[in-house]
Image (cartoon, rainbow, N blue to C red; front, side):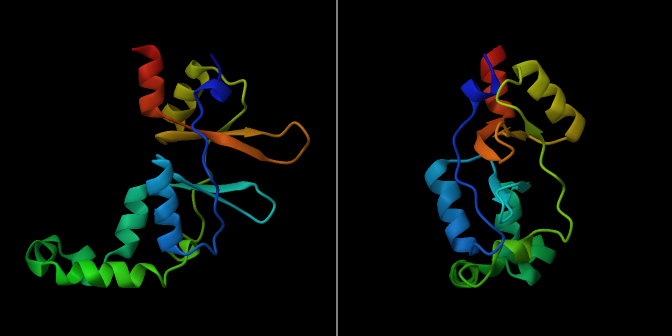
Length: 149
């Protein structure tokens, strides 16, 4: 079994993607992370859903969890309304961590070692056979656990 066999296909997005559209992709694909690529298709980041959720929250709520406990449903509408105006590039750090990339022929053991070394719960499976990046999908830690157990 290889990375290409375990990879979940995913749709990549660019930095100018609206947060609402990115969330729609995550929900439809049930993806463990959102893969952000540059104009040439090279992976820039693998953004977990928690990062996107955090970015959508109003700053006062983000800074004070107790305020979130009493804020009520009115804040939900604020989050929904604000998400349409935010670009994905706005929620990433200026220099996002380079996502771990493996070849389609990577073994499960190799992918597990890369996840452990990088602290990432996901690796990107990218084929560079013709010098162009072809994102085949992602493999997350849960998929590797299913493989072994």
